[in-house]
Image 1 (cartoon, rainbow, N blue to C red):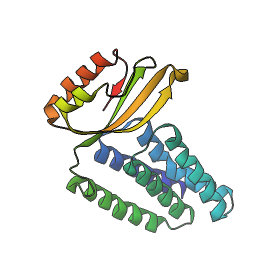
Image 2 (tube, rainbow, N blue to C red; image 1 turned 180 degrees about the horizontal axis):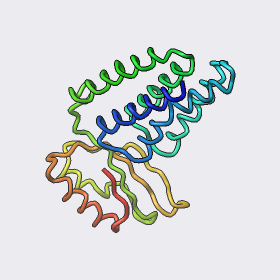
Image 3 (spheres, rainbow, N blue to C red; image 1 turned 60 degrees about the vertical axis):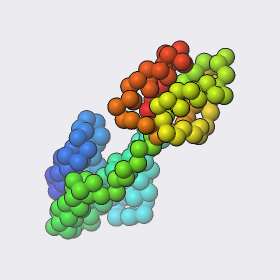
Image 4 (cartoon, one colour; image 1 turned 90 degrees about the horizontal axis):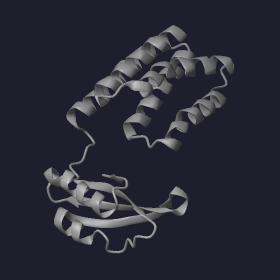
Length: 194
C-alpha cells in the first residue's frame, strides 16, 4: 500500500508540474503526501476520522502563511484521497482514481475551464506613514486604469508604513510596467505589487 501510494504520489506531482508549470517544494510535497496519509491511517489502526482530521490540519497549515490557489488546494485533497484509498487496501481503485481525477484536472487546465477573462487585478502599494494616502494616486489611476477602487488600508512594519489595497482594471496591459514605475516614483520606491 505504501509503495503504491508513493508511486501514485509521484504521478500526482508530475501532473501538478504539467498543469502549473511549477515544480519545487510543493510538487515534492505532493509526491510524498499520499505516502504520509497511508502511513498515518495505518498508524491510527484504521480510525478514519482521527487520521483524516490530523492530515487535514497538516495539509492546510501551508495556507496560513502563503496564500494557496484553488489548484493547490485541489491537488492537496487529490493526494490525500489517493493516500486514503491506498491505505484502505483498494490499490486498484487508488490507481484508477489517480488516472481519472488526473485526466479531469489536466483537461480542465488545458481547456481553460473555470478561468475568467477578467482584467481586474489586485494592486498593493506600500507608502510611508507621513504620506497622506487620500487621493495620492488618483491622477495615475485616471491615466492608466479604467477603474480603481480602494479595498483596504492596513498598517505594516510596526505602524511605520501603510499598505493600500486597490482593485484596478488597466486600460492597456502593455502599460503595466509604466504604471508600476509611476507608482514607485510616487511612493518613494517602496513595494508595489500587482
